Image 1: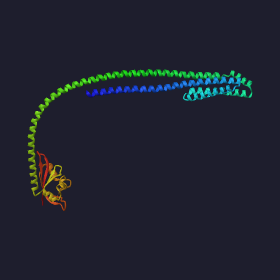
Image 2: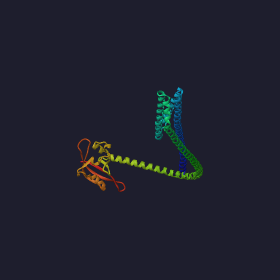
Image 3: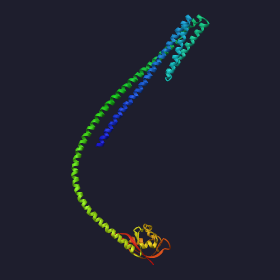
Image 4: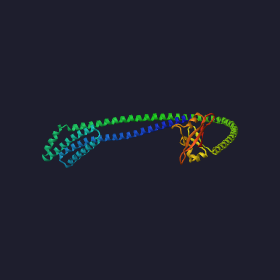
Length: 372
């Protein structure tokens, strides 16, 4: 129950943290988009201003040109040249600012073509004035009344301003929708956080109540446990006394077994015949001193070796009469065999075998070899 409450509390904490991170991410995203929108709005206004400046510079240049034609004043000449220079500069800026917008770039290119015509016309007027005189220049200026270039330039500029204004309105709508989305996101996240914090408070209160109940139950259980421990301690004291007596009896029994084993060893080594004790699997597990002396091997070299590798009978290959007799639980006598010695020729012996039983179960065999 405790683990379950802790898991739920951690899950709620994680949810609150996730909501806060989400709100922060949305806020940062909206800030970046607002900055981009602001840059874009400024860029749009700048394009509009440059477009208007192109038209204004052109009108100023046209007016200064007519004044120059009428007055031939150098100041008017400088004025129309400066106005044309400003117009070209504003045109180049507009081209650079609309490079990423294919539609506006097309408008600027068209505007540049129309402006080029006006510049070319102005050069013709100035050339006529300087080379042919006032009448030729006046005639050119008079013929310009039928030229629609200025009207086209004005319409094109107005069209570009309208398109940029429409983009501004579109951006305003997007900014409004984005602001609405941000507000709703913040409101919903705040409401969810309040609800989750309330649920977390309830869980903590419920957990404290459960802990108090668990503490009371633990106190009662400890009291009952103390009573059981006292009773169990008395039982263990009695059992321990019994175990002490059993341990003494076991030690006495072990001591008796050790004495019997030593007596067995003494009897085994005191027998003059060669004796091998083999296991049920046919391996040597014990030998006496005459066997060590006869074979020339150490005791450790003989223990664990197959008995058939030390004592070889005259039986057919693949059969071991001692193992067969042991499995059948019968005695075996008068077996002619040869004992393998470490150095020299095998020694001829006459072997007898007696099965070793443990509760009517054959567990091994004792083989006695007498030299012939």
